[in-house]
Amino acid sequence: MKLSNSDRKKWMRTYWNDFKSFAWEYALMIVIVIGSIGLVHYSKVLANAKNEYIQELEQYNKQLEAEVDDLLETTEAYEEAYDALEEEVALFGSMFAEIENEPGGHEMLKKLYKQTNQ
Image 1 (cartoon, one colour):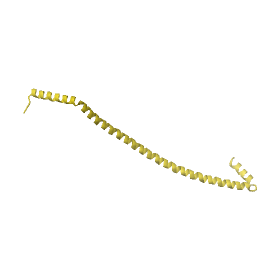
Image 2 (cartoon, helix red, strand yellow):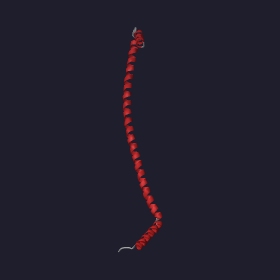
Image 3 (cartoon, helix red, strand yellow):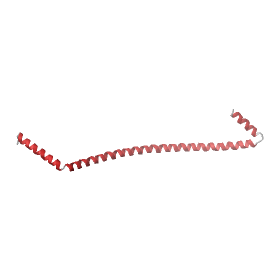
Image 4 (cartoon, helix red, strand yellow):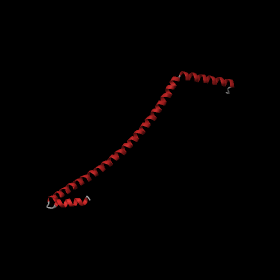
């Protein structure tokens, strides 16, 4: 069955008026539903952004931990070298003390000291 132009216009006008009355009647509910959907979507986007930021911080933290481990190893190596030098200084100090106490030892050390500091 085919509608005439006037019947079609009446039907469209009626349909449009029904739609407008429905929209006005349920406007608050429609706004709330659309707003809720928007808030849920915004919350998901915000949560994803925060998760990405947390992952970046965790990666940076791992890098810092690796650097700290490297620095601790380097510090331990320096401590070992320092301890070895400290032992050598103590050994040479004892040797110089023994030479100093020998006859003519003081003069010999004095002569060597002058030669090295010229």
